[in-house]
Length: 124
Image (tube, rainbow, N blue to C red; front, side, top):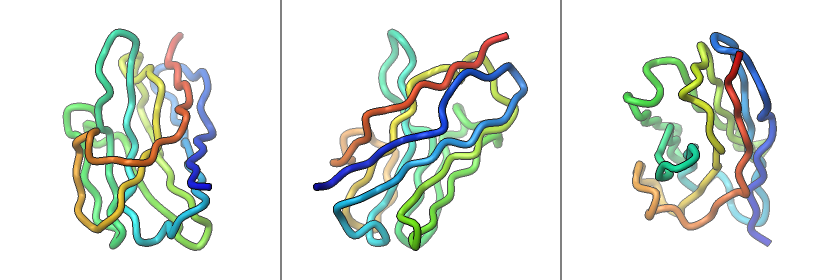
């Protein structure tokens, strides 16, 4: 069964750091392009960061502003998003997603496999 499960979310204060994780099962993780997306209340889902099968990365500059780092560990079948200097605007449900192939896309519609999402709340 193909599955992505996010973990590590929670409530943090502005300026804090948080690392969220995604654990994959049921498919060949190392051959997939993986990504983090997020959706805030009343807003469309948007891409945050993508990491290709080769390790190439792509970030949404408007969202990340050099604060986030995406990484993957193929041996553990896991992907991570290190988030620093968190802002209240980062409050959202964060989703892990995957797509076959090596092309790196930020388009939500290009991703076939999704996790259930995890809440990240930044509030004082």
